[in-house]
Length: 230
Ligand code: C5P
Image (cartoon, rainbow, N blue to C red):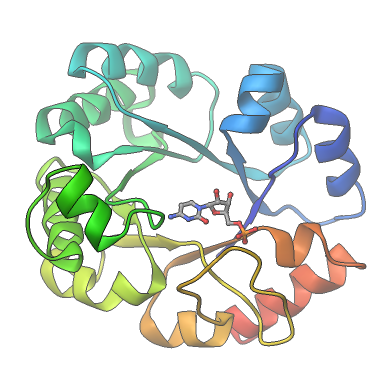
């Protein structure tokens, strides 16, 4: 699936972007839009028939995260995330909270391993997390799996090693996607939609190549075609 990142500062901009899309899509609502517009925005997007990945990257003590998950579960979104750095207990309690509210119809729960903005040096020196960045990412992914989560957000370049340790079914959601024709913006470790399919990314998250395109519907269709091969 292609997930379109709705990185807009307010409801008007997000809705005017969505207007020309006639078919339901999967969209990502992040902190900017959610903090500015709240749950009404989610309800409005749901009414239009789109699926929603609510990207709030929660990280707090297990009890707080669990309570927040219960609130978010009632928004009927399709995917939610949190930071694997919160630990296995935090992740597992978050999962139990979603199950308590939604049962089998709970949203997918995925973890952020290390942010792609964190370099090897920053992780070792500033955060004092020892070891190789890729090993740490794999270890955090395995923790997410142990906690019962459905998958992780990761760089496309990490997909294969994560699938190797966590299994093929473990979902990978990958930003950092750029079609050959597009500007790279501030993304550094990038991959094309075609390559993302070949390496086994389950969901790709694409923002600016669609939201800033002269014809966003065409850009979206082209990227879907490249990723899904249809
Ligand atoms: O515009 P672009 O395609 O770069 O947008 C990618 C989206 O994915 C943005 O919403 C960005 O915050 C998010 N993201 C990312 N890298 C991560 C995690 C999330 O680019 N590691």
